[in-house]
Length: 292
Image 1 (cartoon, rainbow, N blue to C red):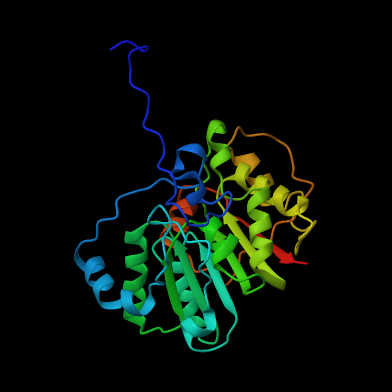
Image 2: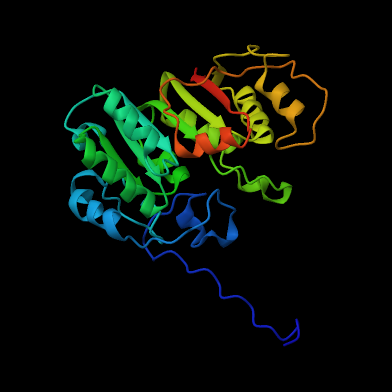
């Protein structure tokens, strides 16, 4: 078939009539085709222990979110009530992209006085998190399958979060894919919306280019200050080490004179993903931004 005779792609479905739609949300686009997103949809099928964990623990720990258009969208009228969900009032930590739940479950076990919300689009990852919750008998963790910008933009009340974690988001390392990166100026606005004054936005990545972008986003935001501005510069900078090793870029003899890197966050356990990065010789970057 010639290029001219190929059929046009089907248009994106329109939102159901009468339902309000949050501008910029997943629902406002009908599908992901008209707006780049920071994740790729993968299989949602559950098997074995993951299916068993979902059957046993979903009713207690999965946040029942009213959907709008897609299975990871959040209806713009829904607002999460942490006090009702957890049955108490406690500092709330939210992890965006919780993966298999290693970091957030370990933190919840170590900090029973805090509440934790795991946000993930990958259902098997959430099932694995439920498995970990059940094995440890925890009650201070909830999970939600949802698109992060909608969680931060409308689902969570403004100023309701004590800590926001974004650990090792997809780096989208090809230049043409940088628009898909999660951490950008618009995301910083959403992070600022949900964090209480003095709250902390913690970031980590093993890609030097993305680390610089994260640092620039924090620096440019009027809502945040880098808690370690100017620290770990020069020879002590992880960016200097990355530039010297050339593990993810062309090796240079330059030094990072800006700094701004936090020490490794002690509250983040060494996950299987981070361990693989270290074994591959990659450099880990941490940033801690405080909500002003």
